[in-house]
Image (tube, rainbow, N blue to C red):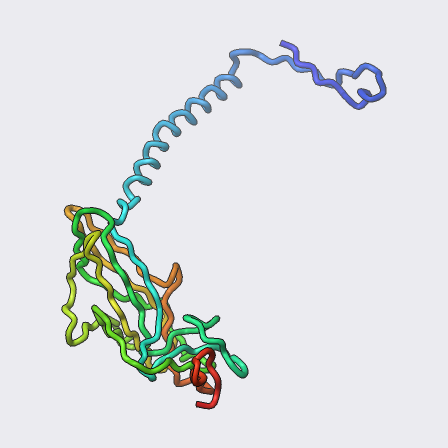
Length: 250
């Protein structure tokens, strides 16, 4: 078989191209056998590897978690806690969570857990993972208002301990708990950081029938943050009488 490769440089001029190379190709020779062998090897790899990859993807993919978890970060009305923000200037408009704010020691993290199916789910335990530690955050301290507050399942969390763990309040029974679609639970966690700024998350261990899992609980995809107020340079309080903003000098 003859294969001709034409010079197309004269294509635009209207002149016929010139054959610049010709080569005879043997069909069924050693070159074709090597190509055939290569195709067979590729086919064999695909047959063996693809089912293995699919099996691994299936084996490492956890079953759907039969729980819904919603978290929120807020201030108890106890006059002692608040937000720490970078130096704000003269005043800060009151909001549920000022921009750049980090919860101070004694703030609250609420974890609402509800079942998604008709089956009961046992919450076996909840563990704390410290992501990182740093000196207490510098900035201004926005103090919370005063009043009273009720919490259903209250836990204290000492983040500066060597191995932080959730400590139930006096009237709170420890884990395990049981939740269902019509029987949710709310956990209110009060974290404390001593002269530190600690980022952390929770791991909720659950089981339902012959299934079990570990659900990561965090602040909308980011670790929770808790800082001590020892490095703050000023204190802001809610302005009287309407409490619409924080102002310095309290």
